[in-house]
Length: 266
Length: 320
Image 1 (cartoon, each protein chain N blue to C red):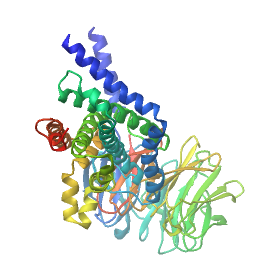
Image 2: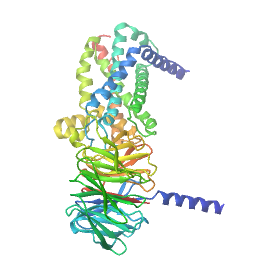
Image 3: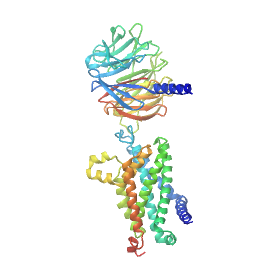
C-alpha cells in the first residue's frame, strides 16, 4: 500500500515536469536551439580544421563537430539540471512547493522524484538532439543509441543532483544569474566538452587538472564512450560518486532542521 | 547430425577464409613494408625490404609482390606468403611508380630522373625497351584491354599514349599542371588524371584522346594550396571514383557517371595513394605524414579506422 503512495507521488511529479516541459514550447525549443547553435555555428567555424588526432573511443580522424557532439549532449543535461533547480526556486517563491512539502512522504523521496522527472526530460531532449545530429551526418554505430541510454541516466542524475544542491543554496530567483556565471560556464568551458584533454594540457597544466577533475568532463566522457558502444569505467565511477555526493548534500540542504533551509528560515 | 555439423563447420571455415585479407604498405622512411589485417584493423608486422620502398603491386595470382626500392635502383619480387625475396627486376634508375600489364607478363616503370619508361619482361627479368617520354614521368597505367600504356610527365604536363604492341608514343594529351596519377575505367573507355598543382581531375576519352571533363576539386574552408590530388581509382562497376587529396587530408568521393563530387572523407595527413580491397568493399589510403593508413567502408562511404603502420607510408596493395 505504501509503495503505491510512493509510486503515485513519483508519477505525479514526473507528469508535472513532463507536462510543464511539453506545454512550454519556448522552453522545448530553446533547450534544443542552444546546442544546435553550438553545433551549426560554433563547430562549423572549426569544421575545416584538418582533423583531430585519434583518441579513444574514436578509431579514426574526426571532424570537430563530431568531437563536440557528446559535449553538447552534456550541455543539454547541464542546462536542464540547472533549469529544474531554477524551477525549484520559483516553486518555493510562488508557494507551490508548500503543497508538495505537505505530502506525507519523506522529503528525500520527493527530491529524488523531482530529480528523476528532470532527468527524464533531459533524456527526451538529448534524443531529439541525436536525431537532428544524425541528419547532420554526425552518426554513431546503431548500438550506441541504446548504450548511450544508461549513460544519459547517470549523467542526467548527477547534473540534476547538482542543480538540486544549487537550488537548496539559492535564496531568491534573482540570484540565479550567479549560478550561470559561477557554475554553468566554468563547468562547461573547463571540460572535455569542447576540447580534448591533451589539447588543454598543451596550453596549461592547471587547466588540464581542473578539466580532468571536473565532474562534468567525466559525465561527457561517459556519454562519449557509451555513444560509441564502449564503457568508460573510470568516468562511470567518477560520475556515480559525484552523483552520490551532490545528492546527499542536496538532501541535507533541504532538511528543515539541519541544512540551508534553517538559515533561510523556512 | 554429424554431416550437418561438418557442413556447418566447412561453411564457417569458408566464411572465415573469405574474410581473411592482407594489406601491404610500403614505408618510404623505414625501408620496410607493413603487413596489416584490414578486417581487424591491426598491424601484423613490418619487414625490411631495401632502400626507400615506394611503388608496390601484386601479381594477378596474388603470389608475388613487386616493390620499387627507389634508392637501390631495382624492383624486388617478394613472395606474398613467406615474405622472402625471390628475385629482382632491372627497373632502371630510381623506380617510383610502375604498372603491371593485365596479362601479368610485363611491368612498365617510370624513371623520373631519366625521363624514361622502362618496359620489363617479368619472366625473363629483362628490359624489353626504354621509351623516351616527357620530363619527370610519374603516373603510369595500362588499360584493362591491354592496348595502351599511359605515362604522365609531371613537368611537361602531358599524358603520353604508348601503344603496347609497338611500344611507341602514338599521341600526347596536354593536361593541367603536374599530373600525378592516372587510372583507366574498367571498360578502358576513360582515363582519369589528377593534376597536383592545379588541384584538378581530368577525364579523357580513350578513343579520341580528348578531354571530356575537368573537375576543379574544392573543399569549402580548406585553402586552395592544400588541395593536392594524387591517387585516383575507379570501381569495377564504374559507379564511383575516389581521389586522394594530399594535404587536404581527405578522399573525394566522385560519382563516376555524373562526375559530381559527392563527399569528402576525412583521413590522415597528406593522403597520397589509395587502393581497393580485392572485393572492392573497402578502400585503403596511405597517409604520408601521419604515418598511418585509413580504412574506408565503401557501402556507407565512412572511414572506419586508421591504423598506424610506420614512417611515410607510400604505396598500398591488398590480397584476399
